[in-house]
Length: 181
Image (cartoon, rainbow, N blue to C red; front, side):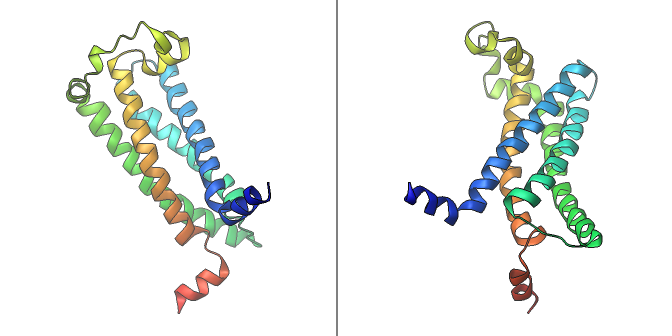
């Protein structure tokens, strides 16, 4: 048990980032596909759902990263808003990446990727895909394509966001002093 505790203490920040990243991804998916289900098959629905999900997930990520991952202790309102502004600006890059991936792979060239990935050959009436929720998320080739690309997008974003948060947004004072020299 002591070894586990030592490992956790040594890698606490990364472990907490992964845990909070998983939670943020769940929030993202609930917001994205929940709004997608509510909107139905409206034109550009995936783009709108992606935007909604990003705003909700970025806000959730800021709170959890600040408090649980990087344990940032801003002591003034100005410092808090500066940290938030830098965080949101950095996440804006991730937002644009997610929107670009959605536009290219889901909205514009979905048919090409559905054919390339043989998504039309999947039996959507068997196994896990018969579950009501799974059917709404991945119940046909277009939905499956959107799900796949949103997963890949989130993995890329998770990595990019950790690096940006660690090196820019939530740097510890000692790290800031070293980088400013």
